[in-house]
Image (cartoon, rainbow, N blue to C red):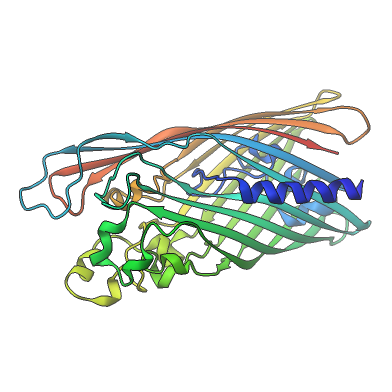
Length: 424
């Protein structure tokens, strides 16, 4: 069994490296992790059954020995529309019309294993994709003469090691060592060379990559027989810089992964039906390359302040704001071999109307999502197959082109996900 799991982990690692994946639901993070959690729209920080793949690290000591494999198929649909008549003296008007991003089907595997060390502690290892951003517009949106397409591609993969320990019978804590790998590529941005601190490291340099480290801690407490609470905090993950894009991202190519926290409850209000409710904050604004606004930073660069050039510490970013996300889920386990679940997620998108120009590249504007899922036991005790479907409802953000008054840009996105998993 251990040899089989080792081979699966190696296979998933290779598939992750080979996959070009990207989707944006909770900003550019996944709605949920693992098939069970995905079927709850990401709810369940106090529901240990779905904790193995990037859940609450404190829940794993209650899970017992378990292996889990999943494969996620997702279909993000992204487009932008330019309309209106720009002023005669507009600095940077775009061509009118609607352009859809290519690359509409992706897959991403995940794998996890939890081993009980004794009755009070466990250790686990997981590999999974975190999410990212991807656009591939079949046109030179920003008039780059060196590229016929425009877009970015950033993907992130995590390899986590978790130690979980009981504190008495009804409480537990967990700590995760987080190792992350990410890659990035940009095309069609060379037109912004006059605004860059390093025009040679701005666009069209192929894939760059880097590793980083962080941590995650969690608490799970069963306060009564039917009511539990869960808390987690994940630190900022400090990533190696993208040297090949040091003239694009603020702080000379820095692209750390922002911190987040989640708090939630789990209430079994009838014996077979569990209600979950979570609140989550993602702190995009603490990473300059994500949170710095385009304007007035770009204007300041134009006026000769080199500290605001692209790639400098104050260089324009995507202007993403910190967001709060609220999730609810229901899990029904009243049948012998079947479990059914559903969930919904509601949040603010991180992109404001003033930031639409750069966010043509990263239209992570999803707010509301719904999910359904089930599990079916089979064979030996503990063996289950899982299924989840998640739909991120269509949303759009509209605003004026900040470099061409009178012209309007609308960015839009929706997404469908199907995930299959097995645990044993």
